[in-house]
Image (cartoon, rainbow, N blue to C red; front, side, top):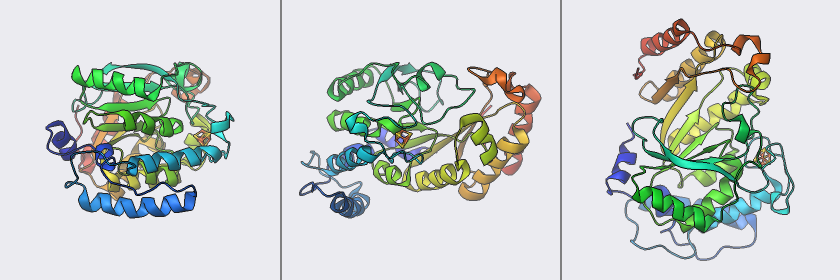
Length: 332
Ligand code: SF4
């Protein structure tokens, strides 16, 4: 598991964003359609030459092109499946209310999966979900609760953490999705060969998924719900299963994947088991699945009786036994 990630850490291969920087693009046209055409061609080249790129960066390069496409998308925002269509470059705000990227905190995180720690975790303010039980609600629901940091400055902080022992850059929030263009600006400045982890609710649009291909090394996903009704009621998210399951399939084709599932009290039958069933059927049981038992009723959870308490041990055990019975290898 995570074979390529460990190769990056051993210096045997480059992280994807550094490969994208080595793929030359002759020019970046002004028309979005032309940019997308060139992007499709250059992604073919990236796939063919992934392990055989030159030592030095090209200019302009595939990462520059991806950034330019995201800047166009931000003018009529379609970064996630809410597709608000607002011009964020002009200061308009959509559902997530993220105007510009703000960093709420950054530190070396020792509580992530063992392969990832120490993980340089960057928490962005703002989110495109409204989960009533959000444990980071003070930043996810308040996009102004963070500092504006110039991309070059953040890239220096990342280099500093990398020299200090971080094994990856872990982009989280809130949610990284509304900040995708800013993140690519940071990566453009970054020299370190550090694996990039996209720690997300996986509600990205198909268009953003295309751009993240060839940038991200690990999708660290949060597969919360097993049906649309719970997603709409508890996170105010429409079309949850369609979007999130599609993006898991796309992510699995692009790079490595760790799937997290936070077990909610009283949501074993409606959510946990269907999520496990879906993963078994669509991705197989060799996938890295982390069943999380640390739910606590935060934010507005007390207004929803079924999730107004901690998870019971018998609920956790039922879900773990279910996954084990299917053939998943679950670390306890
Ligand atoms: S990222 Fe924000 S503004 Fe853009 S589509 Fe999603 S919710 Fe709307």
